[in-house]
Length: 403
Image 1 (spheres, rainbow, N blue to C red):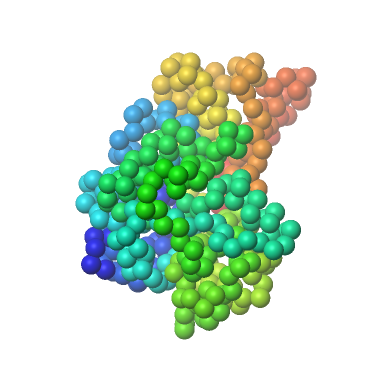
Image 2: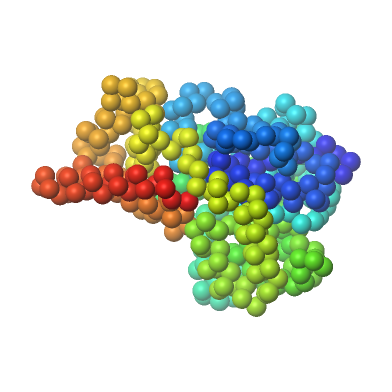
């Protein structure tokens, strides 16, 4: 490529193996591309940038975010990794002088056609990929795929390309601002992290290009209209086109395998891709690093922060003022206040478990549920409350031991 092209992804440390696979895949296609690792976590022990496929590390702590610790506390781990994407994009433009920037989710791999994407940014300010580019024809697929797009967003923000032009920067500044304030998985309010916001982008910004090629952002949610052929050795084709990049979304939860079996069973190339990806992640440390907990998952006494803790805190300005460092348990802190008062507030909500959550997240949510119920008034006797507290504590301890 002749342009100053940069790429990046955003992770916590447990996703480092996947990010390595992504970065190496990009470097194989074009070694001249600069790759930034955005990390909302501590660097793991033994990390040596000189030995990594990354050119640079951008720590979330170093991004220009006011009141960083309360802001972080107000986000789940998934929300956090998404919320920093816009500011990281702005940082890459301003501090690294990028002409064009591509974001890829860490659970992607790039196989070809980066030059084509770069060329499109010569004529467009922003590139987006929709979840689907063809109407579904069966009721099951409509419910699985089109209705999911209505719920989670028309565009899959596992990929976005932006040019350092006046219109591209107008988009990136708007996106960064919305993510700083409203990057939440909050379906009752019409939000799903960064994706639902970008439904509005074609209405607000000129020169947006919607990629309709079936070979970009291939994933289980669009396999009904995309046929994979070929092999890893000779090249994988999607509807006869060379595969650009594949999205292995849902690996940790098991959803990827379930939906692949449902919609990709007649494409052996897809199973070869899956087996290749599993082997590559393992080669890059999945077994060792995949279980690392985020540094922002715990209070400073080591106890697990639940989604309920985060939700109530971000919705209550009085709590944010009273506990400017909600991670702190000095003199009890927000953690103690929550334990004593959560059942008495109308803002307290029982959380449902996301069907795409990892097993570790499900266990953490179960711990939160038992904790909530213990203080909700539903446990109307001392033995019931003690049993619920015990179950919550055991599950909280188990979170540390689960991948």
